[in-house]
Length: 75
Image (cartoon, helix red, strand yellow):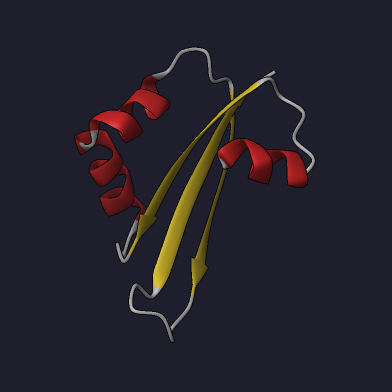
């Protein structure tokens, strides 16, 4: 779960949310996709989240090729 991943990474916040995307070529396309998705958009717009970690990984051997994630948190 997002909470498990945050805890394993050392995050001690009380609330977390996560957005994930794959196969989108640019950060702009990722954010546009998240804004068009009600659940992802809710994480982006949630005023309780005051902290953010974001990353991407490239795997040329996978079907998607690129993976994006944002982890939202609140202490």
